[in-house]
Every structure is written in C-alpha cells, then in structure tokens.
Amino acid sequence: MSAVPRFGRVATGVAQKHLESFAQMTPGVMSAVLLSADGFEVASLQVGRGGAARLAAMGSSLSAIGSAIAKEAGIVECSRMIIESDSGTVVIMNIPDARPPLSLAIVAGDGGVLGQLLWAAKNCCIAIARAFRE
Amino acid sequence: MSEHEFKIVFTGPMGAGKTTAIAAISDEPPVSTDVVNTDRAAFDKPETTAGLDYGRIALDGGASVRLYGTPGQLRYRFLWDILGSNAAGVIVLIDAAQADALVQLDAFVDAFGGGRRAPIVVGIGRSGQSGALPLDAFAQRLESHGLTLPVFGVDVRRRDDVLLLVDTLLCLLELDDASRRTA
Image (cartoon, rainbow over all chains, first blue to last red; front, side, top):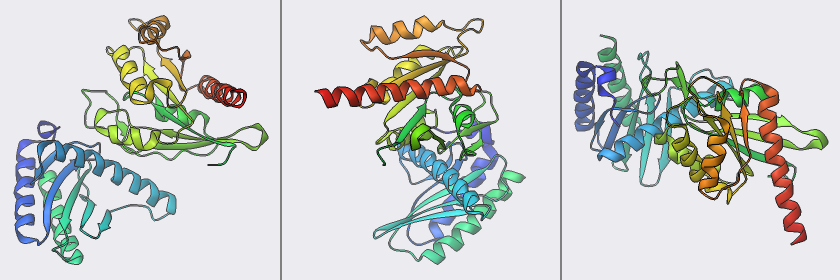
C-alpha cells in the first residue's frame, strides 16, 4: 500500500533517486523500502509490490518495538536495528528528524561488508531527511 | 508460562480502544509502541500502535495476567498471529459507531480462531451513541455464524468495564479447565 500523496510527490521522487544511487553504489543491497512510522511504503527499490508493503509494515513494527525497548533500557532512542543471518542482513534505520517520522528498511545479501552498508545507509538517510525537510 | 500466569490478547480495529483498555487496568505503566498516524482518513487520531501494547495485572492468590494489545490495521496481520500464539484467551474490542463494525467483528473473531483455539470475549464500545449499532446486533451477528460468545457493552476508559471482560475470560478458562478434568 503506497502513501505517496500524503508525503508529497517531489519528496518521494527525490527519495526514490537516493535509494537508487544507494543501491548502485553499495555492494550487497538487494532491496530497500522507505516507510512511514505507521507502516506505509513511501518509496521502494527492487521489491515486488506486495513485498514492499509487507516490509514496510514489518519494518515499522520493528522500529516501534526497538524504540520501546531502548526506552525501557534507559538508552533513550533507537536509531537503527540490525538483523543478521548466515545469508544476509536486514537493517532498519530511522530517518533523522523526518516529519512525519520515516525509516529505511534495507535487505542485503552476504556479498557486502556490514560497516560499509551501515555507512552508506546512514548517508542515504541523511539525504532523504533533507528532501523531506525542504 | 507458569500455571498461574495467563496471556490475554486485546485485539480489534484501529480506534477500538485496545491501548486505552490495557492502560486502564495494568498495574504497571504499559509498554506502548504508538507512532504518528499518517492515515487520518482511516481514523482521525494522532497516534496508532505499530508494534504492541503490553501490561500486567496481579490477581488474588498470586496469579497474574499478561496483557498484550495488537495493532488494528490489516497490514499488521502478521503480528496478530505472533501475539495470538499461546494466548490463553482473546478480547475483541469493536467500536459500534464505526460504519463497518459488524464486518470488523467477523474479521477479528475469525482471525483469532472463532473461539475454537482460545476463548473469546467481545467488548463493544460506544453502543449507546447516536447512529451506532445496538449491542444485540453484535450478538445476533455472531449467532448467525453459529458462535455464542459473551458480548458486553464497555467504556474502555473505565477500569471496571475492562476488568469485567478479563474476569469473564478467566471464568471461561476455568470452565474449560474443569470440563477437561471431568472428561
């Protein structure tokens, strides 16, 4: 389920471009979904239509639960969550200061380096945040 | 799970009052995963649950009840299954003033096994409100599907109303337990 009209066509178009260049320049990225905190797909990359909606909903749940756990543990704010398996990685990263709140969910295969993925994802989130503030 | 610890799930559509109901009875401040609601067309409220609600109440005699709330939107269906797993019972909350209240009742009762997997109690909010469906409509709807489930009118902000739902569910669990022992 896409929520593009609610988030503005210009900002979501810019976010889509950022996702594309992020995937091109970062080894191992298989798919990515920009999602609202309440689980709507805002922009997506290399994911089937149903898959993007599901990843958006699941990503928002993980982000919300991560924030609740961080608060419970007294570390205030959850900025990202990393799920690792033998065959790949899923990263849920919050877009800083986005209004409404947004997160980026990334699925990567085992071909990349986690540090490189996180660094590139963080830069992508900063660029997307700028698009949604302007 | 301890023999004297029960897991109860609160479910129902967006805006039915699941987060409010758990907050009304939990002995400790509930865990909430509310986020900004961007879908004001679906329901006009500032926040919505994206993960789960969690609270806990202690009962007489050392028993306790863990209270879990689900998100209400269909896109979070995967969490209904996760949270419903191993639940001793389910409380379905429905807002009688919502246009599709009966369809919502069918959907949530069906998603949680129609009372066959675990007992279900139904709480109907705003049934006295102008334009809302009366309480009987919900009981009749269930009967039309061959289901006899307890249905109560509730104000989820009132602790006693929510405790009535929990107490009824615990009574059903005791009855199930007793009938298994005598079988």
